[in-house]
Image (cartoon, rainbow, N blue to C red; front, side, top):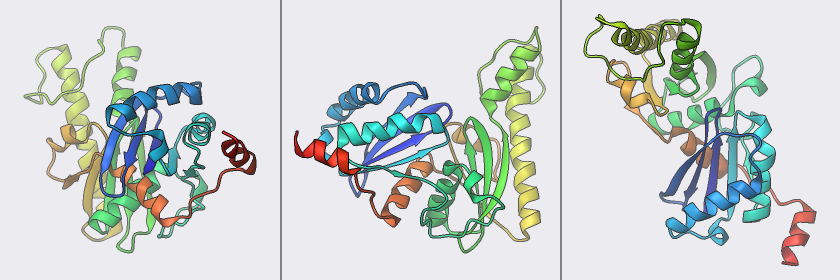
Amino acid sequence: MLLVIDAGNTNIVFAVHDGTVWRGVWRIRTDAQRTSDEYAVWLSSLLSLCDLKREQITGAVIGTVVPAALYHLRRLCRDWFHVEPLVARASLDWGFAIKVDQPGEVGADRLLNALAGHRRFGGPLIVVDFGTATTFDVVDGTGAYLGGVICPGINLSIEALHQAAARLPRIGIGRPQSVIGRSTVPAMQSGIYWGYVGLIEGLLARITTEFGSPMKVVATGGLAPLFAEGTLMIEHIEPDLTLDGLRMLAERNPAPTLPRERTRLIEHE
């Protein structure tokens, strides 16, 4: 079975795929200082609840946009699962061209979304990811990654609005019944929700015009279903798109081998 780890700025997602289906998907808050032992204790309990054992894990793949978290995640794979993880990088075999000025600067999550999105829906394609940042990634008909757009995420915008304006409260995200708010909180909720719908529709239209032909649109991330309710431009919602991309990347690339010193330690256990 394959252990898949998607380390984002807000949460780290752990998942296990048995070659056919996902056997479990779990989230924990991102903390770059959390040790491999802490991850192991937490993850072992969740595995057991799904009738899974550590010994069943035969491979691992990590995608991270938090470089500081990589050391402990790699140690988790080596020390507790006895596998060397494949780490998603631009230099791997993605099966498509990365047509940007600096491929090494592209976040792994964006390439993973492009890989899974094109494999599932074909192209040309725009992937909208509602994460800590809201990203728009552009894939052509051959699957080549062309770049995209990075915007502040919804929660970041809400927090910034609250902190910068002394009389504005911190609010939750929801779809307002009307655009015109008749008090402070509904007005803020309308600005956040319908403002982001306007941003989404405006950027999708501009990207499509610049590309020069119709494009499919797929959304991922926790808030994708909520914002898809407000626009007809989002055609597909795929909550596990990044995890699928990691699984597909692991299928395309040879599994790394454990460092020699780790192999010797395992043989003596």
